[in-house]
Length: 165
Ligand SMILES: Nc1ncnc2c1ncn2[C@@H]1O[C@H](COP(=O)(O)OP(=O)(O)OP(=O)(O)O)[C@@H](O)[C@H]1O
Ligand SMILES: [Mg+2]
Image (cartoon, rainbow, N blue to C red; front, top):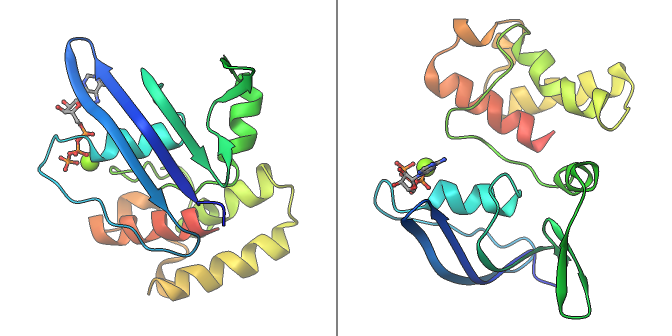
């Protein structure tokens, strides 16, 4: 069975700070996998690498069997174009540590945005799912609120609904 996420010898540095020192892991489809560790140890950095929001310095990462951010020819790696990376990200959900909700639109619109803009779903279909997901995270009554009107935890749950959408 193809691993949902696989890492092999992943290294990441910021300048002289060596943060990820050879990460190896395999997550099976439907498996729930928790990464736990001290603040500043590199958890978010690793998640960002899985999305190719950070470039790794060594090693390989795969999602659903696809090499993240690169194409392999022989034993050489070629970086994908930004449009190809964007296509890969379409199938990976991420909840940012600071949520990064769009501040100028409502909770409901935040959850509808990507399916409509990126996947070209109709608004009716996207709205129906967004309402269901907001209900699932306990925010049915906050669909019309803007992010600045929500508590930190409520914003976090909108971000989870958005990632699921
Ligand atoms: N863009 C960056 N430039 C320089 N250093 C960075 C950058 N991003 C993260 N770091 C450093 O990398 C280390 C790991 O940061 P990261 O955000 O991955 O930690 P974390 O494990 O998610 O911590 P927390 O539990 O506080 O969220 C930290 O020391 C941080 O200062
Ligand atoms: Mg973090």
